[in-house]
Amino acid sequence: MTNNKEISTRIKRLIQIVQEIKTNPSQTPEQVYQKFSISKAQFYKDKKSCLSLSERGVRMFRINRINAIRMTGEKFTRDSSYDFTQRHKNAFSVFAGDKTEKVVVRFNKAVETYIQETLWHNSQSISTTKNGILFTVHVAEPKEVLWWALGWGASAEIIEPHWLRQMARDEIKQMLKKYK
Image (cartoon, rainbow, N blue to C red):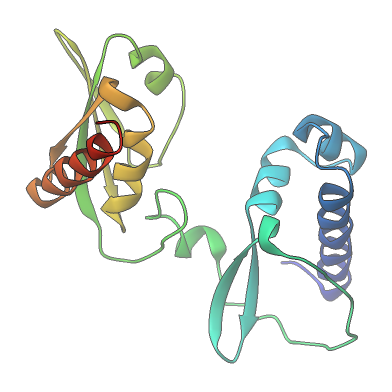
């Protein structure tokens, strides 16, 4: 269990990291996480987002969107039942939820090694086909997988669900208009 002193230390470190990134944006991630003696995994979690627990519920903030930060002296009581890992177990990236939907993406041989060598989601399964691989996940927000898959260009194809495949088709049509 995390105590208040440890939480205070982590918040102060997070403030220092935000200030460091804002002051020296050209630093590599390795330089920043080595400077603050934190693990690479923790650095990327801290760099991506900061949670706010308040009477309005759990809110997430992107670190790169924070313009200023200061200690207020305001105290809060941590909800000991809150479990970030449990809350986000179904998130492909950011959007959490309890209900999941199956998403299947076909990747061609040109990128299959890159897909296979990384754990993208805890529910992922990968099966080999004659032309590449099928990547399957069960996630809270399937659109996050679509956005990720679009980043792989023509090497990726949304197979299911059908509505997401249609959304990919519509998005690609809109993209194509920009290149005519």
